[in-house]
Image 1 (cartoon, rainbow, N blue to C red):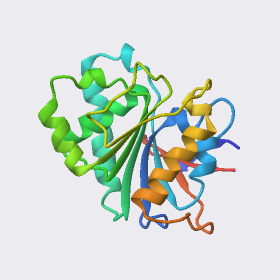
Image 2 (tube, rainbow, N blue to C red):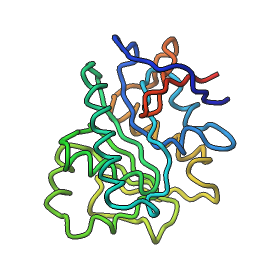
Image 3 (cartoon, one colour):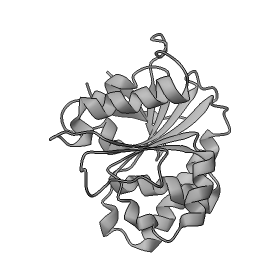
Length: 206
């Protein structure tokens, strides 16, 4: 199962009512597609370009956030029933930057192996976003990524695999969104999920 880039896509109507902004690395791993399998129905999924943020300058991160905000505002001209964010590692920082710099709000966010230390001394911002977004913190490293203050739920998921390759991480993420945020038992199977890179290329699953 692979994600393939196809054509530029400008949506007029969105058949899938649940929007996800997610890390590309979760949905396009080198082997296996656990997240694709779990979110194969009922979603419109926009994938953030994978980049090593530790090698990006502050100016590059600001520019990337601005670009994401512009494209999200275009997408959100269409009404979605829900808007969720799934971040892997430091991609999760975009949840906070989109909120503080552009007031883009997600109903729910799942942050996976996010180093919360980058948010130290930003308590007022954290408190504000926590009032608008229900944040789940999933982590495989019990020491480095543990958080009990900034997330509504903080859960250790033991695995020797990268979260991008872990079926448990995909199942837990799907569960908190579908069963929790959407208040559904399962997604309807007659509406395949749509994928697009945040840079406007449409993608499909085969």
